[in-house]
Length: 226
Image (cartoon, rainbow, N blue to C red; front, side, top):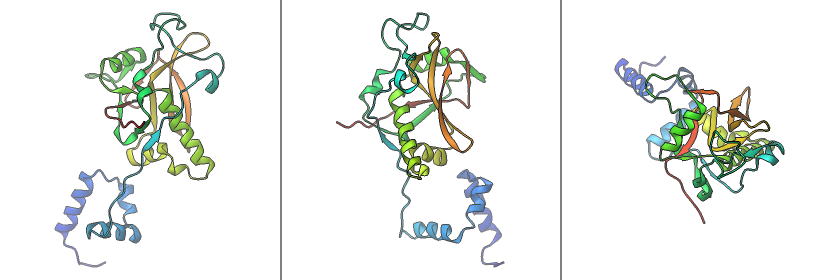
């Protein structure tokens, strides 16, 4: 092994990797000469780092009766009602979004103080009291269809969901911007999760509890297009 680098320099490099939150596996991958050469080109000013493209168009409304089955609807009216009368329980601000930049994604746990879990209905109330846009059916559907399309092409890694997982360690996203009414009258929300080796969709009852590993998707800033 070469003695070209001093112990002090190696320690400085180790400190920098730790501050940048490099894992042991990340450091092992850095032994790849081709990857190190790419970093060197960036340091020399010959190349630049291009961040993962995380923008996606919201082109379709979500229809629970078509996506899940005919007995599913958007919840209407108050949480303690029958879900069949009144305004739809959703964040209508999502309707104004034509494009979402998921680089701006906020994953909210809504835990307070020393809480480790929060009931779904209470979590929803806390989200509604905030200013962030709660992403719902349109965002869910756009992410899911993008993933399915890229997977059909044999390139699932190019989907926004996979880029979120690899660049931001996101493996589960709940969509509290749309409350659904199930066949027997339960209130539920959609979610996407990475299980096994792929992304899957499902829904979860709002009467259950959410912890730190079950964040909801919100936006603090958005981009719209006409």
